[in-house]
Length: 468
Image (cartoon, rainbow, N blue to C red; front, side):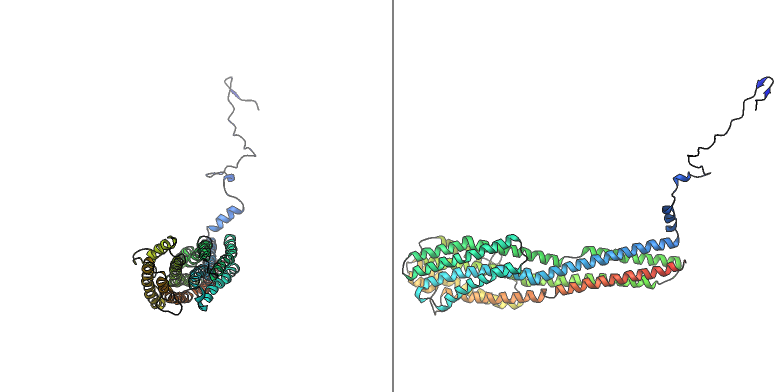
């Protein structure tokens, strides 16, 4: 249409509104474009979660997930500790004692071989039998330890080397005895060489095995005695969440009790209490196993071995007839440790200051014989220093006599052996049932957690049913 004119002047056409772009957002009065809003399943989920039934479903999912996590964690940690306690009682502690017994048997064989050498043709059958029994014990325990342990490849290698070293040492001793029966002084040199081989090659290898088994023992004990902090923390958190949601339900519905959630709370509380009580009980038993078994046995084994090495030095000094100061120096070093004050680390009195009740009397008797041995040795050493070798030898050891240093040492050794058996019994009594207690705890916490899941589903499920 032509534009109208007024007074000969063309009037301007009115402005036209722009047509909307088909590809652009649809304007919505008073709001954002529809494209900026949530749409589809996500929008429906968000909208549903803001309704009372949606909030109930969210709470149900969170509580069930937390309950399952608590149950799995508590059961898993209890089961792991049960396995560690079983390994402690049936594998690592017996293996540690086997390794210590291998070391002690070899040290005793060395001392007994020297005693038999000094007695020569007058050697009593029981002395020879003791030496043979020591070697037989070591020979039996080496393959037993290798077969019984879940030891590392390095431990297996060390046991194999020790098994090869033992016959060599026995062969050197037999050579020394054969030469000694011929009346040749070379026999003493062979015996000193055999003892040096044992002290510098065999015993260090046995010590490494004993140290490795002691470390495995400590690891199993620490794993069994560990506190399940994760399970305890999750249990407290779950118990708080259940309590808080029951308070919210009470405020919204004015219903005092929700039977399902009360059942779940009771189950979680029982599982948490069982876990805490079981942890305390197992920890107490394992602490007693350490203080009355593991540590006293370890100290006693050390004292017995050091005493045996001092006794070997005592006898070999007589074998060499004072030709070398090495054995006197070894005796002095070991005797200084063994006779030190109870306040000094490593002393007999310090290591054995607090034994279990059942071992206290045996250790007291052992200490009395130990002091008697020291006195008799000092008297024999004075005689030897005065050039009275035969008298010194008679004061040190003589078949059928009870007033020698050898007799006092053997009496102390018998008391130490009895104390060791008492301490082993104390360990067995303390650690024997811990694995079973923890295994029952693992099963119980899993069942209680399942009960808590069922109670939670039932309690909130009934509330959800009211909205249908």
